[in-house]
Length: 293
Image (cartoon, rainbow, N blue to C red; front, side, top):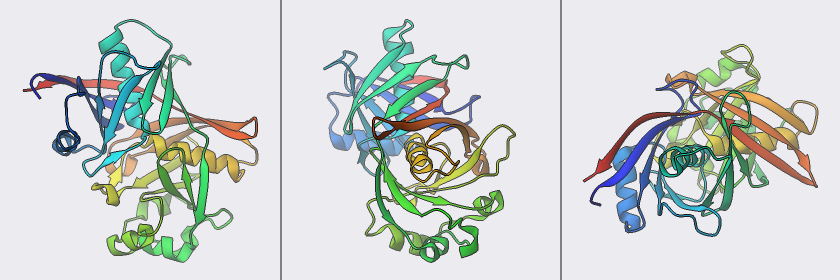
């Protein structure tokens, strides 16, 4: 691991020291799986990405994503953050599109599609799984059953990494949510999804449409401040169940306010050719660079 360069960025962050932290390690092809896992544990963020080579292969850059607990096939903020590093640190010139070769497949990231300088990634079409009983989910989150908006299901959704999507009625309910670890782990034990996204149509900031929280106890951390993969699943869920009354949406989702890491994720989704097309956008901010010795 001699002189492996790494970078730290904040993803889905409108300002530095907000959003979700990410460490990106370059030149990682020679690392073993155990070494990547150990580095991810040292970083102790929700995910660390490993760029295997500075050269493209099959039209994209080979990237692996590790949490402190395990490798995952896809995650949103690592995808955007790694594409940002490739553009600014490897290529060093403006390009409109970069493709990452991930375990889940090729994920394209588009730059500067809007005046805000945000990045956009196109996620794979969502897959919808099982539904859950409101009583069991409310108990796992230390909430009352009436806090859950039962006009809509509590359901597993995956765009590469599955999440349980749970609609709540109020921002107050989102704020009060706390995982009961025993009940939470019992809930996800036999489920494909091991994390829960809760959301409500009330927000801290005017102009945003939803407030969300994502609980990831299974992955070794209690809560994620900004989760692109979960919000991609949320976008698919909102379209599938016509949460806003139609089959298209363009919304702003705030996350991380309850843990002092405010973030902003932009969601665009709609039905195209019989499938739900999902784009998740946000800003990336450089924090630091260094090297492993």
